[in-house]
Length: 541
Image 1 (cartoon, rainbow, N blue to C red):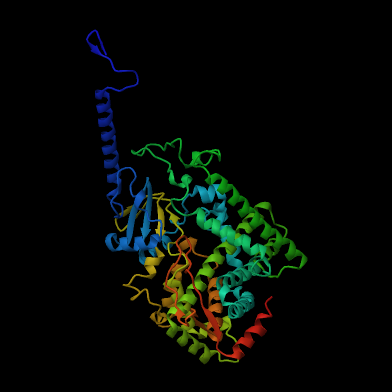
Image 2 (cartoon, rainbow, N blue to C red):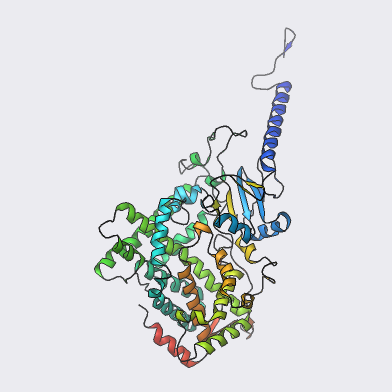
């Protein structure tokens, strides 16, 4: 439209000159941002190609991420860096580096990443596993450590041994229920030791509640699943004061549940209710029944309450509730995974099974069943347990740490706020340290506890975040492994043509992994062995 020699654009339509200026301004800002980001990144660890603005967001692996990180380790080395929408991720692929940083510098490597879904919304940030490092966490660790210390473990051996024997007998009688039998066995041990509660059967209400809680936890912490964890808080690219954007995670979590894309809020509300209901229900049951004498004692809750008699406060009870919940939650899935991995190994490497059985026969004989007290005399059985931890670690990618201060390691800059992910899988499958890593070879440790400790130091976490109950867990797994091998041959199931079905090595993805479709038969080695199981299992407390 022409007016007095001037060209007027329709209202709301930018002129070509305006668009050009806007485009140039945007490109200039993008270049400045990338130059600034590059200046910060150039002294950081190497990593895959980073796209402008989004960084490596689309490259962060979602399925079996530890395998991708292991492949990248061949290209980028022991420490690699990813940038997911401004969130720095440091993946450690070396046991030496993990020890140098997470153990020796644990004062600044013991934080946890802030997960809005799992933490703020569902409530797992109150548990020891997810809680920021501080006084509350130290108190929970103290409760667990004092009850599951090496000195106190002998009082629980009878429970572990009896549960192992009932498990073996149950699988002998019903091999098709292997997984549910393993779950019930582990739950019966943990609930008795933690709460004094005796599991009644595989359909026990408390078991169902506990495993549902763990299923929710595993889903809540999966990276890239929840909108509230995908949208990052933003900072000014020139290190000025932080400025939160309107739709950062803090804002998103307050959206009405009917908002499109915010269905996660309904899920979080349901999971939070289940989490708190389950944990308080178990704690209150333990407190009431330990006082009136109907719960099995000692148990963790009763021991702490007895020690703190007259000093119990609501805050202390809440801390104890979460400590007990951590023992239950952390011990359920990890031990189930380890036992199923052991069974898979025996099916695929029968020569190991025979060698282990020979050691038990030579040391324990056939007149009695093995006990946890036999552990020092059975180095090959200890090696079998260790090799299970190495071969298929239940947590292949350690629950992430958070770096609370800027750090420099071997000239490499590691920024404050980084998510630090120890790739335990690669550390335990590094062919330079463990030749032929996919083979199951207990002999690789030479029967030396010092060599086995190198595996357990990785499998049970690092620094101030290491599992406080790992000695108890080792006793549980040893008891199951020794009892199975002393009394049974673990043999494959057969199809309708009489052919043996050897399971493939396949496993789930997630924070905790499980072998898939493990089926077998426990064939009693002698009638005497089966009779011993029947007699002993009946004495479970």
